[in-house]
Image 1 (cartoon, rainbow, N blue to C red):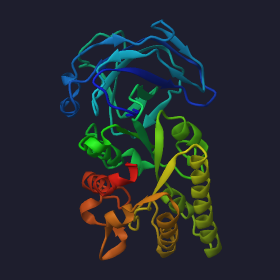
Image 2 (image 1 turned 120 degrees about the vertical axis):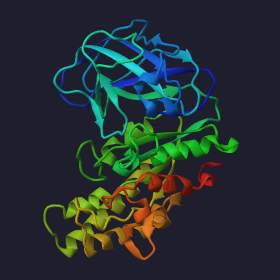
Image 3 (image 1 turned 120 degrees about the horizontal axis):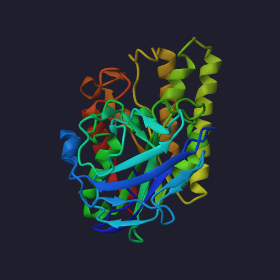
Image 4 (image 1 turned 180 degrees about the vertical axis):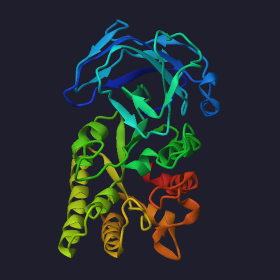
Length: 359
């Protein structure tokens, strides 16, 4: 969800997307919106998410829409209260959607699936709970001229692996909450563009960061700053299957830094300042089984990050164990030695200097 602005009442545009792949178009019969009672209700369960201000979304004045494959599709604006940090529920009835559904896995937020027509229901006791988001690509909110957004571009650490399911305690969530608590930063929104497994240089679950940069960063409403936390998967995947030579390690470090330079240049060309985040410790990860050479790669990348971006957030310094700099502090470790825990995400959010975003 794009949290581009805050307002008591605003026009809101809903983005729907179909993956850029040769799949069938999506035919929506009806889409309704309702505003959740509060953040806490989502933790207690969907039964508490009562139908408030339930409205039908329209597309060119009609309640049904055929979305072509490979496209984003913007709804007509909808006027309703859009309070900062509030939750929204969107119900879609699909006439057909093919065998491949555009979605976001591992999002630490549930969707409900049910057969039949239940658009007006306040509760779905027979629904299946699925840990994916489907079709919704974002929500844009009309805002005052001095409002702007910060895009957080990253991998599973930004996406929230290790966060509380339906708890909204990923580090971008908590940073957005911090901004809202300060009158000087209350008109700043945070757009979470983290995708699990994402890399700078190679595709995985999603397109690599360079390939998705135009859509996921430049294409976001009101973006003025970018926080970039990408690269740990590039370093880890280098030796995920086999060991490589020292020359290949050095080449991978150069490629990661070159990708950073590309992102800096492309962002600056659009007037966007880039805040670099240092790569966090991952020695001990059973998935990547990093050794001293992998750690040396990380230690080669981080000094460059600290010196060459428009600003820096030193997540490495925040999360590392002072006695074992190559490892994450146990109090901040989710248990897999790669992803932070909710306490780690809180420490990350607290460590971001708000002054970076105040002119």
